[in-house]
Length: 447
Image: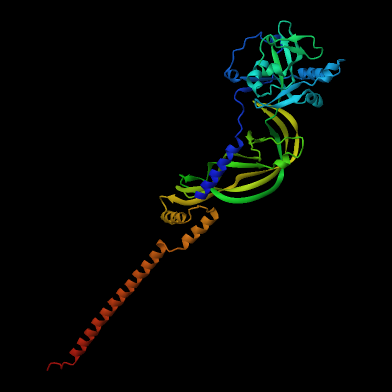
């Protein structure tokens, strides 16, 4: 029992490894940008989630992204745009993770996840991490609500690190550079969201690769009762829980060099399981084992259910999604030929203990003897076949029938001895009588 408790404890310690990551509580991703005409014109009662979102990133629509790529990368007859190399910030889980350049957006055609973050939010959370001596410019968009007009623009690095928030701030229009916008015109800075991990979804398992059996453990106890007056089959069930260990072969997942070494989210048993960087995780599983047997009238039998740990190695295919946090995910590519190992409980079986009955003397004796054997074998690792053998052996042992035979033999012997003694006594009396008669015959007859 101590070994089983130690193993279960070790398995439970595997679970926190997969759930060490926590999403930034004050960072939110909004995927439905408002129309230009709706900005600052509608009243929305803030929810509890909105009050916690101190950093809000609003992803670009497909139309916005197309305009952005066209403005930054297409030839508009201006040599200034081609010569410029503006920058954007990279965010991962709401934290500043680096910067990218205009050339990267043009190289991948805007394939990355781009979003807008308000200028004031960038100053409050990220400006202090930047080097004030750098001479860069950042991509933004300026929206003048009164004219219902929005344009791409760029502003200098010094305005960001110096936290310029008054009329000195200017955002220069991207193409011609003849229009200027101030902070009051609603400035949003371009950022790129980096994925936090990959999610394996739509998993399709291929045939088994290998199955290896391991040790057995005690899952729980139950009782079967037959209250009726006839012998019949009785069925029952037992609920039990265990920690299913999962180990994904990471090299089989990251066979594509374009994939970064990120943690994995695995769809398993209808839930999303988080794995660590080694592909290891655990999951609490609740199962039910069914069992039954034919029982004597008005009898009971105690049941122990045991299960065997098995290692199941399988191949699977899946769809790889990039997960960015707060429920935002995007399809990346298909995966084939990946491998994982499931360590789970399988092959459950009942162990029927001594039946308890009020109307059978044999059952009472059997119960006492079996309970002593269970104490000797504390593991309780019996099978029904072994129990049947033990029942047969118990029947061969001397019981009430043996004592009855011995008692009958002793009574018969006593009767025989008694008859012998009676016959012998009667024989002695006859002999004495004969001797008396003979003595009387020697007397002379009277004259």
